[in-house]
Length: 363
Ligand code: PMP
Image (cartoon, rainbow, N blue to C red; front, top):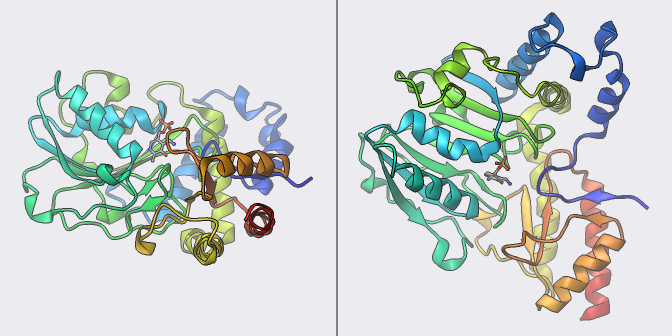
């Protein structure tokens, strides 16, 4: 049975990358050691992390005045690290269009009880279960604010922010965890971008931070590990970094480059997700909670059947048929197909055939 992995993360990785890692597993580059056994201060690992950074810079066309950091703690650590470094004494705006954006805002509010800054909820669509991207009141933005935080892809709800607000010079900070390298954004439109690796980049354990140099903190930020300036000055080697994850990220970056880069990824992702959206839209049986086509994610596509019993039956039958991890997030139910870069189009075609059969059987 062919297995298709629809997991929202950790997610499917390119088979070619896994095979390359397997081939090099015991003896990396004639070193006689596995990548996992290399010192993070060794020449071999230094080449790996430098190549990884250079490739990411090339793929995302990251300007020279941005630092690229390979950190730990997941995107969730960034929810606190960001205000800790950037927000001191200022306002920090949050656009909350999904559960993860809400977590980012909630963490900021929590931190503001200890650190002097003012988190402000700029826009939210929570009252309609985050089924759309809310309008952003650009006129309400104080030009002296530290940043405007957005989530470019709402992993659980399946919406995306494609058109950035005009923030009148206030840096936009984006949680790009679930569509980094899947949708082509212009890095210079952002002050900072962060993303957990476990969707489009590699295994869990690496967090990418891309930050404009002038936003690096000038004062120490509570703890060295949580200090962007210290992490940048030490080229992400302040402590022992997640070496194997960074190596895997490097292999994925090479692979994405070989396939034609981010624009090509976005094109294919639009094709893949388009097949599924078109099918859902013509069906009387399946429906998408995201009605506005312009808000729809190309990475995570939630859908439901006419009732929760049928959703349950669908999830069970799909799992038995090799469509793994298609169950919706525990907070929203239904189904969710995550079609990240490494997810093959054949998997979407197979899913559509399965959905058709299930519909006929249960109509
Ligand atoms: N932000 C977004 C948009 C996410 O999808 C996730 C994880 N699914 C997170 C943040 C949290 O990431 P982590 O588990 O790496 O902390």
